[in-house]
Length: 250
Ligand SMILES: COc1cc(COC(=O)c2cn[nH]c2)cc(-c2cccnc2)c1
Image (cartoon, rainbow, N blue to C red; front, side, top):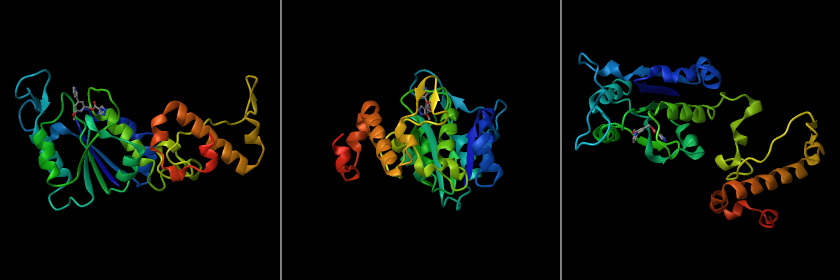
């Protein structure tokens, strides 16, 4: 997968060189390029923003630099498999399911905006050439979309084959957020490791029993309990067929 990020703060994307994503890039699984938006400005001040038409606070990002950047990174005729991602508070929720969908793309171009956003006409023009996804990582307003790009690249990148070692396979993701796995739709229950007794606190004995069927049942019960407590909306959203009769007894 090729990933292009266009931003006026390239240094904000430095963490993409680190750890999981950095290793994936080194291994050639991800081909990540970060670009300075001002590359595609031509005036003396490298202007990327202007005052909002109709008045109002702040500034709006001009369409021309973004359009030139997009055209350079996705030349006409090479749109197949390319998708433009615009992080914004007014986007549809970025969820694990959206991450799984984005992981199937061959080319993602991220347009993190600053100020009050990007001139709408850029989004509309881009949507005539390739799918455009306006996505929100949460109901709050950031000063720019760069942090959201880091979130999305990590969530998508870790799903790509070869990025996670076998020990951390994404197929067993926290259930509320993975559409796969034995407990799809549920949050992850509590996890434990050695020592068996720490701070006078015992690991639940069932986990030391070696009885994998009983352990799996216990984990499912804990996931159901945690989901009901923390995210009852996810319980409502569960496919009834996914619940067995023991679940319904919960
Ligand atoms: C593309 O348009 C944007 C993008 C961003 C940065 O992204 C986020 O904040 C975000 C992404 N998921 N959750 C939050 C911020 C605004 C904005 C809106 C109003 C006032 N100030 C700024 C507009």
